Image 1 (tube, rainbow, N blue to C red):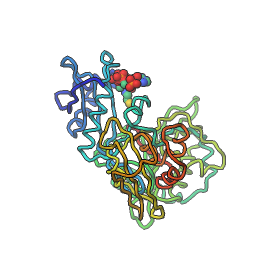
Image 2: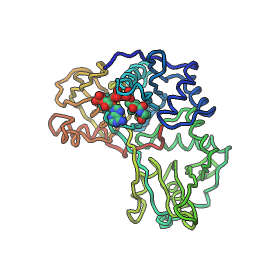
Image 3: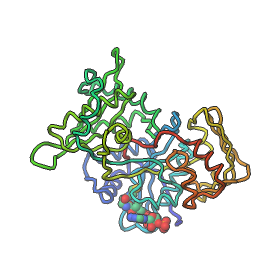
Image 4: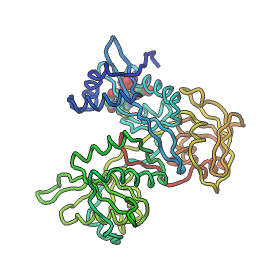
Amino acid sequence: MADFEVRELGLDDVEAAVHLRAAAFANPVNDVQREVVRSRFERGGSLGIAVDGRLAGMLTVHPLGQFFGGRPVPMGGIASVAVSVEYRGRGIAPAMVTGALAAMRDAGQVLSTLHPATTGLYRRLGWEIAGAFPISTLPARSLSSLPPGEPERLRVAGADDFPLLRDAYARAAPARTGWIDRPEWFWDHAYSGTAHGYSVIAFDAIDGDGIDGFALCKQTPGPASFGFGLEVAELVARDATAVITLWRAIGSFGAQVETVRAVGATATLLPFLLPEQDLRQVEKNDWMTRLVDAPGAIAARGYEPAVTAAVHLEVLDSIAPWNNGRFVLRVANGVGTLEPGGTGEIQLGVHALSAIYTGYGSALDLAAIGALHGPVEPCRALDAVFAGPRASMLEFF
Ligand SMILES: CC(C)(COP(=O)(O)OP(=O)(O)OC[C@H]1O[C@@H](n2cnc3c(N)ncnc32)[C@H](O)[C@@H]1OP(=O)(O)O)[C@@H](O)C(=O)NCCC(=O)NCCS
């Protein structure tokens, strides 16, 4: 990899960064974008490379957490990787991402997740497809076949309800594999969207104890002169009554809305609710994850208390030498450790271990494509250790 100097970006870089992002992502050059970039740079974690005194590439690492096994794992969310067109093909993106790896380790972010625009670039650097981000459509009228749930608990939420949305999310997210542990600034960012045509349907808790769920929806242009489309950007629910009542309420738009668009994790439970297979995936951008600090990541997540296992691994990580070598993975009583040593019975790249870690990739499947080598029994043990609800998330960052 070419030798570039990766440095933290600051307020002096805002104007160049806004223009770089505009060229790379078709973002506008305006004061809203300047403010987005400025607040990121103030928060820290944005890195760049200059060539001949000009900003040639940049990325941001969002300090986030991600729930696995019910526990929030400190995670660096890589976003906005951009290289100016005249400097592409020289290894600037790999150099920045490698620099971010070291920075995340220093910051205690034991895991890193990103939405890739191209998968191979990140796979070669140790990330692997590790969770779902589908975009699906279904006829609104399919939802009217759901049971009504408890519609008397529904109401349209206003700006004053945002703390209740935060609480509802905080109570629902730990049970869902891969959901983001959202910091305060993330809420400001996510819900600035409500000023741009999103509306929120809330599902009140019983006895006035906050809300048990909500759906963030947006009207979109319809296919014909009559009616409109509806996009469900978020659907968060603490229990089955909340899930069913919210989806049924979305179905009540069926007189005007022919097609509902379900984004990301909102769609993951629907196939099990609908009487027919009406949900059609129309796009997707599965996210990728990397173990930044493998022992730290294994220790940080939760495990099923019923599972006890010891698996000897030989991890290949040519970019992060601290992860490279033989380890013994031990899991018991809901706690996991990864300690140096052992026989290295299973050999795998860090990218394969990352996919297994989130439960999205099966060790047996990865063995079938040659991404992992070893006997069947320890592969089965790995699959049992990391099994859980299907990894997904609501956010695209
Ligand atoms: C994608 C992007 C960041 C790559 O930056 P770069 O510094 O030119 O990267 P390099 O060409 O040095 O490539 C690194 C690797 O990625 C691969 N790669 C780069 N662009 C690619 C593309 N568009 N499609 C597939 N692979 C690509 C290269 O072939 C190279 O592979 P190698 O490691 O086997 O040699 C840059 O093209 C860009 O800014 N694009 C527009 C914004 C964007 O899509 N960002 C990605 C967000 S995830």
